[in-house]
Length: 201
Image (tube, rainbow, N blue to C red; front, top):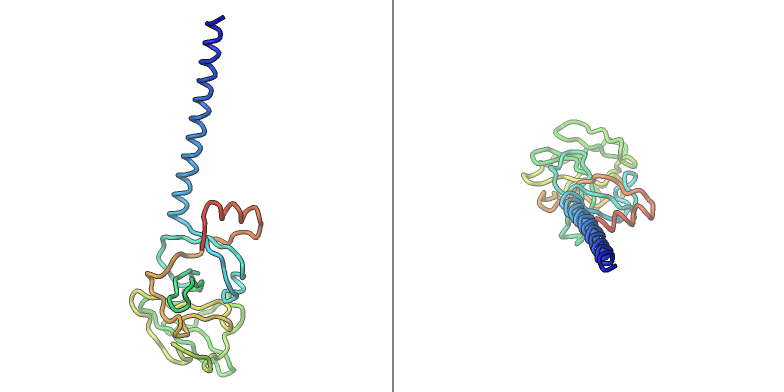
């Protein structure tokens, strides 16, 4: 009787140890995944309409943390003047020349390195903004992007504070927080788990 009781107790202890080991391995896997995810990606809440129609106010997006900015990339960067992260599209990188050339009908077109840039992603044509203040880049003036900096514009050109204005100007590459990786689907469950695992700003 005592022998059977001892075997039973040992069996229960063995099973408990197995369960504990499985739980420990599972928690380790979850923590390892979190560390990897946080090192590669971050989460950002879109605030405002300056990136319409590409991004909408209130959407969550995931960002690549390690990347080299190229023309066409959508990035999030720190703005000391605005005191909040901004999300814009890179239209020129260090060494590129940028011109917003008047078309004669009240609009301006983007030229980079002297070539017209076709932009199918913008909400509407960019109106002549020369009456806006304070400007950093006036229409028909060519500027060269300094080393270590980027020139950015919002896709909603007529409702965006970006590199055209001195409040943003050229963006220091060191201030970039990440590049757009994906848009989080507007689903409460998906959003909950993404925020749980990734945090965000």
